[in-house]
Image (cartoon, rainbow, N blue to C red):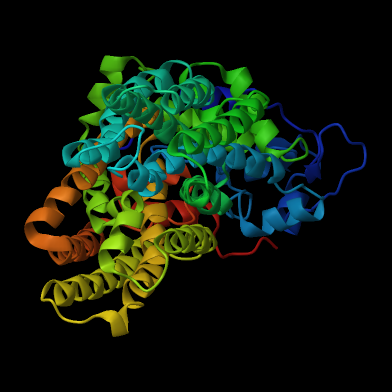
Length: 581
């Protein structure tokens, strides 16, 4: 037995007054309207009677004569699909495709995308900082490990810590960020993280000792934790479902731009201190200024009971001419159904123990850790040393810049595919492609370790990574979308931060152990291990993950709670194939 309709939404429908005209009218306050006659039999039966109001939807009012009242019913005991469909006298649901055609003929505006794109772009700028933070060792370690340098010098263990301590800070930052996301919202959390990031970049540029350098790297990693969940959640909650995949991909593109930025700056004739100074100023200031002028997420505002602000924020992101009331009603009803207005910390922890939610979190936790052992972070962190070890025929810094460019291109491609391919395909096929290229790269290093001449195939390491990089970027983008969209709205702010704890733990393990793996089983062993991880991810995703493409966040939650069959029935009841005469 499914729960009944939300009392808040029912109250909204009870407030709708009866209309005295047996027609479908566009624009309550507009004297010019379009009428659509009902069936002839029904019209004749009710010619001399008062009209019965069938409910409204935005600017559309549907009315019928009293004789048809026996056919008019609000669906009772429905599963919580936020279905507010009333039946017309001929038995056709009010929300049918044909009625939508009537609405379209009346000139209903489509949702605006400019505001959504701008907000996603600003969130993506915060991820530029993340890419620069992670990619920094790839171009600065040659200077920091140069024994001839008169500046700071790192030993072998310190190199591993320099590359991985940011992820320890990321774990801490994710836990703090989870509380901030829940209390003050994603946008304010980002506004806190950006100035903190700038201060830490500047401190790194002027640090006088190795231990302080490592400590500041860990603190800088904490800003990763603050930014990660907040920016992704912000984008997924303000985006309409038709473009949610593409807009969520903006943050991944921003992160890849951050890698490219630090690779380009690091290849210039600058010291590692100057590289840090430049990266800090570029990555922290612009997003902070832009986010000052954005509203909070409407879904987060609903969780805090700030309904009027939520309505205004949703209207801002959908545009003033678009009727966002149905989406607003859906958000409120889904929130009340899943939480019963319990939003405290202990209440959210209890919700996470619900079987359907717990299964999602276990699945996501696996992805957060396993995806780090696809080799993506290790290659991004140690890109120049890897090319130097391969004895490639190409300049190591030039190769790093080329890989950075391909990372950006691969992520842009993932945005174009996000709303056209299922999430399963976006993970499985690229994972298998990554497995093949990593196996080839491992074979190259194995041949080299056998003291065989590889000068004739010195092009292979760069070529293999050029093929590997766009595929792994597609995998990362797809998992970022899943991380944001399959968690319930009521606990997304806090649970996404928990997922980032696993994410950064996996990153720390992958980047810290890579130098040790190279020292024990060689580069070939490390890359073959990453190849096997890609296959495991593809198998698990193929077995566990349903397709969420094209569904609203509320429908995705119902999909995991009640199954695909329920979603199909819900969508069919909203958009039946019959036509209204």
